[in-house]
Image (tube, rainbow, N blue to C red; front, side, top):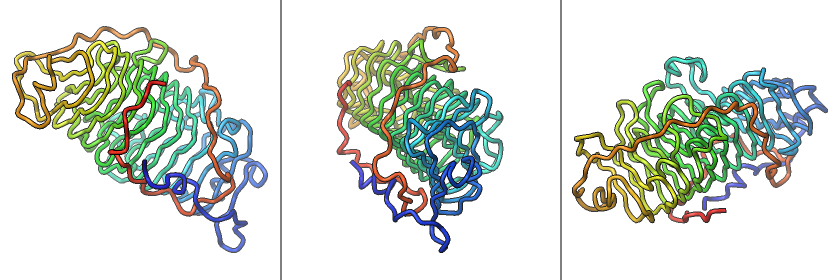
Length: 413
């Protein structure tokens, strides 16, 4: 689908000792007793290679261009014991985190933070300045039962999040926020039993969430605009070829505030493309374009999706007496129900809007909350292929291009 993703992630020369100035493999615990000691000793381009074991650490990475990698995704475990704050927190450019499990931290499993103002989780308007971390990668990582987010990329751009599994997050499994352009690809991920599977607040420009699975969350996917972060409104995310099923699951943590019960919700976003996803089994709606606070959905395109068994398959929210369509359109979808009725005639993509009446869904109260700490930890997930000792050819950087035309509607597994 895109060019040589495996080469991007795992390419590179042979491991070097570093004595001659070349990149080094810094082994934990053979060379350094802790992950943090190895990270602190690392220089740009070094590989911190973690042996099997359980590590009760909160790791801070502020050295550019290093890779933090486990020898086995399921046997290298960072365990916060619901006491430590973040599993791996990165504030440097070009860092990769690969092939390990991180769980039971009070805030985030893996965090990339490029903001110079308030850190995520501290409240207020996040990020006083629009400084951006540039270049990041999270691959073959399991992040579970953390107190906010599984993988959190904030004020960061040029990223790749692939082959990641997240569960048990009371905010969202995967979050990308406050970036423009973000230039991030999220692919081959699974997010389940989170409050929200994917959340993208003010994440704009070259954001691709593709060929992934979002199931058994309270809400599947939600690009959205909000004033609590900078760079509103949210613009230009592509959601393509995803399997979005059975969200609004009462076994997942409840969303602290806001809507639950949908597959894909565009909350006040602009010029997003929702194409060839399979969206099934949602209590309220499958795909909805809705207002969020003062932000209207504008010029979003919903095309070629397959929707089955949702309360309402396709939904465009219109307040009583409202007639504006704001350039939103629906075309070529397979569906049974919509609000307004005959939505593809009322809001076509290649013709003038037809007759349209106000439509607002009555959203039921959510099921009671679930303590994320009690959600069972996931089973084993696939480890990173290839030579785990190979040093990447360079720092994490621009993600591979995505060929949207090559993505088809997935089958339900």
